[in-house]
Image (cartoon, rainbow, N blue to C red; front, side, top):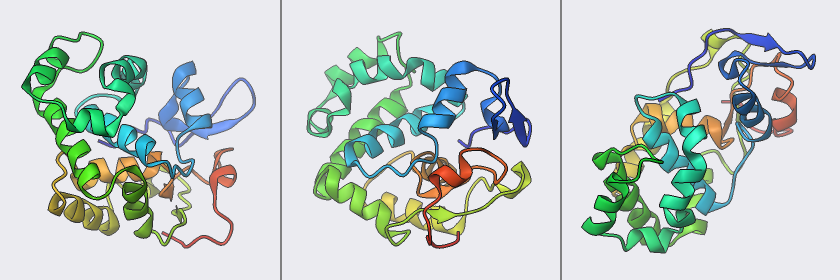
Length: 207
């Protein structure tokens, strides 16, 4: 599920212009400045972010952010091999963990997806798989306003199809595109946002 945009851009008290979706919540603003759109190439972190994006479906990203440390604890620091070996007892344990989003389908998908990553060769292979779609560099969307930020793209649809073929679940095009934005496969910071130029890849391909 894509992050919701209420305004195009907000100029905050520190004088910096930020994408409007982060509002004025300090946690959201920090996430926007330090993480969103920054190219991530660590496969384990990519799996973590994809898992959290799947849990976000139907909820706000801020809800997930507030629970992120609880998710990390509950999911063994998102260790792929550990999660891939989990079974029904672990699903039951997680369903009783009030610190996370207790949705059986999403919990089961996280386990299934860990197995899919391991089957393709592990964290490094997962990173290579994803970055191959963009030629190894972030795509530049250069949105001027929220109307220029899509909920999905043909590339997201392609990645979604290929992930499904590899056994992934909760990987529809909208979740995939939100994930692409978050991990810097595409730079969707508005051009007026102070982070747009900071995360842009010089000479990178246009989206």
